[in-house]
Amino acid sequence: MKRKRGEKEEAAEKKMEIVWQTPANPPEKHDYIFRDGRRHVRPYYFEFISHVKNRWAGKTIVDLFAEEFKGRPYDYYVGAVKCGRIQVDGEMVPVSYIVKSSQKISHFVHRHEPPVMAWDVPILDKEDDVVTVWKPATVPVHPCGQYRKNTVVGVLQAEHGLAPLFPVHRLDRLVSGLLILARNATRADLFRQEIEAGKVQKQYVAKVVGVFPEDEQIVDVNVNYNAREGRSTVEVGNSCDGSPIKGKTACTKFTRIGTNGNHSIVLCKPITGRTHQIRVHLQYTGHPIANDILYLSENVTNRSSEGVNADRAAHSPHNCLVPENNSSEKYEDSTKEDFDIDPMCTNCPNLVPKGYDGHEEGLWLHCVQYSGSGWVYQCPYPDWAVLT
Image (cartoon, rainbow, N blue to C red; front, side):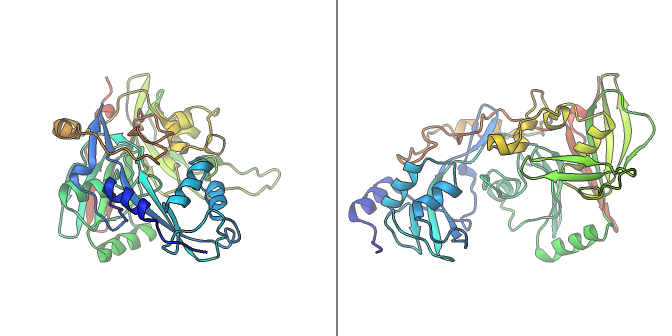
């Protein structure tokens, strides 16, 4: 039996002046808070929408959330259902309600996004149908997981009014450098066709451990990405036992730019585009990226045992790229006001969501160039690429 929201519950939310956001609400400049060199997002009320999968059907609404979304305690979900923060097909239901396949489930949350480094997203080139930017490390390209406003696409919309934007290529969250974004779907599709046809050349620079060989090194070994552990391995075939090679074919060309005896700056040209390809291929050469904890050691904590984003294992204790016009300096004085505390929120009164320590930095891996048929886009080298 379904019931409507109670008058007391509705009155309480009106008193709190709750405004629920959906993906249709664009990020705005005042959404960001800058503290201690980090860009935070002011917590906001957000409606997560999903539809009941076949394997969820037959469970109670509370058991479904407790089993499938383990980030909050069981008691939270009981309270959320009772007060209408969790609804089915737009209506409140009792905690004993059994869900049915394809029903719409709404979860209204006080959303806290993880922080990123407080750097601007400098625009490198701005054309009618293309914009290229210097992506800062730690900032994801587009909304994913817990990130929505703290993304390159979100910041460009909030601070430059650029929308819609269509990222042309992937750049891992901890990687910095050139990012190409089409300004319409037609241009994005043309880029996609070139990339899929193998007509686009990519160049990165990396700071690696030790003295990298002077001659060009070509690593042509398969890469096998383990999504559960959040890391890749190289797979080399054994001609003796005829065992099949796992993973996908992958090839990267490496050329040493310079070395100081302790570290080397290496130009990386990935021919294919596998997950963590450059990182794991450099590890294969014996010269991993110098601050890439995920591939510096075999004894890493994986995502399956810790329940955290595996890329967080690549936390760097060193300084890395700092683009010009640091955002924290521009807005620090205007963003010190407090944010609203939500009594049901499992993250409040903290600004940072649980599980994030706020001290993450970027990899020494930076995209410097993409080129194709009649076009080339470039990004300056980062400060760490200059050896002393």
